[in-house]
Image 1 (cartoon, one colour):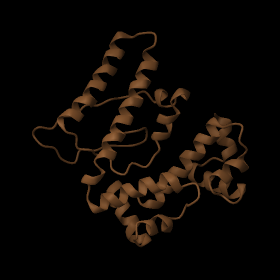
Image 2: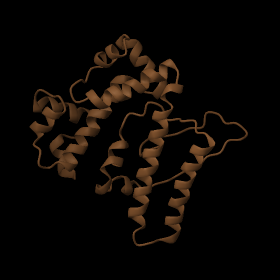
Image 3: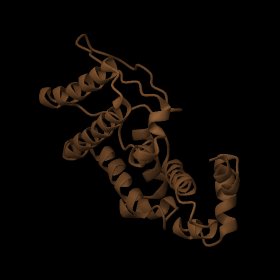
Image 4: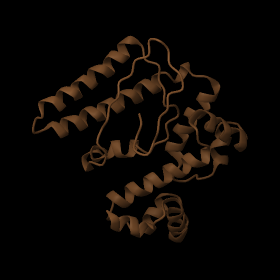
Length: 212
């Protein structure tokens, strides 16, 4: 999956290489009805590649064909149907990733465990040391393993997760004050959260909310 502002490059291929490209307008990803997809855009992906067997690949292509058919028919409810199929496709791919966890090597296991730990603990723990300790590794080696698997170190993914959650809360939960959001994300002070958010995004939380 390649989300907005991500890139892909061909490293190598075999003679039997086969690819299916699905291009989705960014406005679909921002649909208020699909907050789950909007959040999935920013989540840490422990590994972007999954090897599928024939049955699994057929399941994927069936969904893709369904999306193509909806596009061709141009029905009044096409947008809703397309977004529902996109959600199903993402969930299906997520299921395949999880089901193949036991087939991975040690480095990928560390990376995937970090993904799981980050999802559970990012609101309270912003330091690499916490996640490294859970993996029984030194912070330096732990971060190197994550970077080898994903292209970015652990600190990068922690920041991405925090900022993604902050953006979602600022965008969706207008009933929450900045202080409450700061507390939810593990910042002791609202000012600390505001400085962190502006350093990472270039705008303050208030400015970001006003852009909505």
